[in-house]
Image (cartoon, rainbow over all chains, first blue to last red; front, side, top):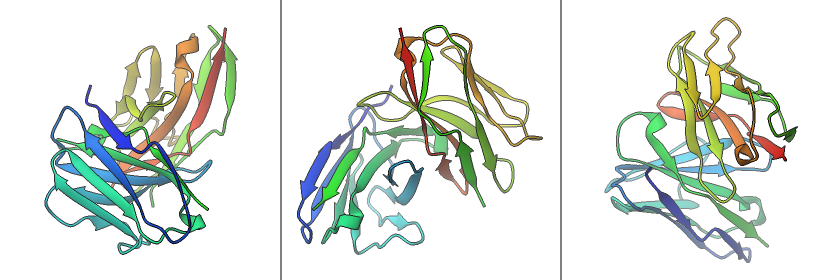
Length: 116
Length: 110
């Protein structure tokens, strides 16, 4: 099946710094990538949807200036958490889709962000 | 609105035991329903799906039936194996997005 990787798998940073998370589709071209956030014992919440070469579409309540998403190629999307604070600590998961339909998403293993 | 409620875990079973993980949903319209599985260290994988009422999705011995009258999509397996240990997520699609439950961690012991 299609493989999606994320890097890093975990990161610890100081409050006020920025952190970049990469999401790569390894064996297919991802026209659409999705970024989710998961708090402990809670659902995955969609943060934004990005299409290659265009601006990301953010869900209501997600600060676009804080969570910068770039989808510059068909195999790479990045999420940058700017000026991170402890409340941004969470598990971030990306998924990628090369076709139509929401069930054709292939998920990365996730990135654990801890902001001190 | 759209939401999914699934039973909280963790669930611990002995090998060959029967598994049920409950999932109920609230949705506008007629969504498709999904079960995803996440094995340790890996991303979520689609386990099975059903697109309309009374459909049964099945894969790897797991089954779930789309019950419109009870708004449910319970996951079942007749005989679990140690290799089934994972986190299971129920989900539905709405407004071209996936809405997930909180996940249920299953541990199967030999």
